[in-house]
Image 1 (cartoon, chains in turn green, yellow, brown):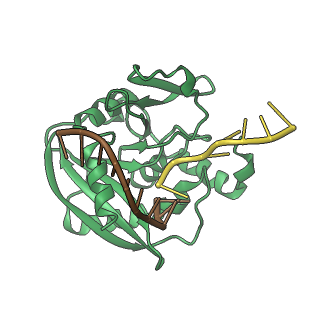
Image 2 (tube, protein in one colour):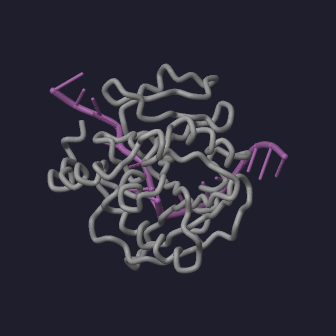
Length: 219
DNA sequence: GCGACAG
DNA sequence: ATCTTGTCGC
């Protein structure tokens, strides 16, 4: 499977960080009016810097000005299955910078996976473990093997599993359009995450919050 | 056996 | 992720 990219030292760190995660019902996030939802997208520049787009929505639909924050990139390369170590520290640094001028968010959404990951520890889990905040991972491509063969164009949702357990959902946010892949990272239930993502979506393949964060990371 | 692998 | 022209459609 992912043996080709296996990095045992990082596997060990993932196992430790995993113990920080909390999926108990009583600590699961449910959005309330005014809750601050922060969405982050990172782009890597030629000069060793990372340009981070940070979008803020006050639930359900108050959009605050999007921010762009510069952070030095990590020295580790991108390796499939270990993206959290590549992008996670950058995201954390951007959140610290964000916190200088803003209240703490109630939820963080990242561009990548949560537990829909070979060891159930994607970027959203890393951010959840490090911050203690609820997180959602929203990816444009799947990482786990999943048969798109039986996911017809007319179906809106298609669950995917790791071993026997449900770890995420492929969701078409627009009819007939390629799905996005949603999974929880920390202190969230998948169904809550899916409803919230729908709320943040208007007329595009990606939710508006992620589109704004993406745009801010590239200008 | 070969392929495929978030950003 | 990024490299890119033209093209279609609102």
